[in-house]
Amino acid sequence: MVSRDILVQYSDMQEEVRETQEKIDKLERTISHIEKQLRRIEQGKETVKDKVYGGMGGHQGFVIEGAPLREYEKKKTDLLTKRLLLNQRKSTLEILEFDILQKTNEVEEFIKSVDDSRMRRIINLRFIENLSWNKVADRIGGGNTEGSVKMAFQRFMEKE
Figure 1: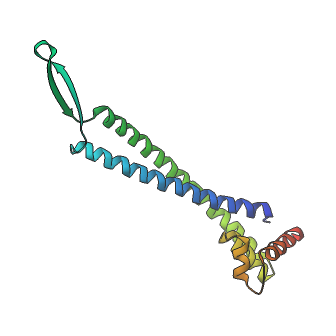
Figure 2: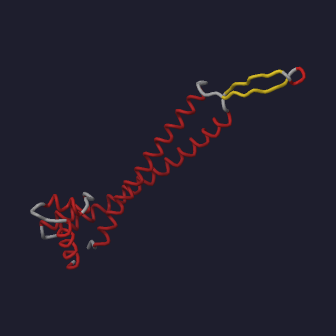
Figure 3: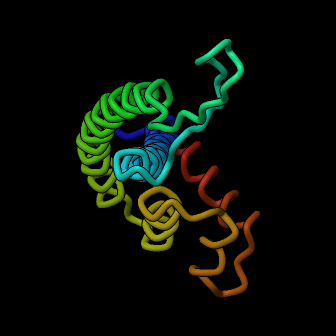
């Protein structure tokens, strides 16, 4: 039988999936930015200049211009590291999504076993759809408040 702890765990798993996806999205944006910087260097749009003195008696000035190789190599290394991290996070997300699918089945089986239609709706809205108690009350309607649906759920779970 599903307990309140499993329902809370299910909500936490949903948040973990969302947070992992956000990390993936941020990392993909970072990778895209680094790739653009590397392309600019490769196309010669980013160069460094330096003035050195030498020649006859060290009095002649020369301007040296070229690709910023140290920066380029650092960015390449950073890009490879971030791509590896991205692959790891995507693997983690796949595992989390598989785990949550299994947990969803458990929670849905529990919801089916509840005799009270209103309580099935409350549990579904709160845990499967991951709505706040306030939004659950709005969806249930009938003058329900955040406190009343939460209290009804808590009383129901105490009986279980």
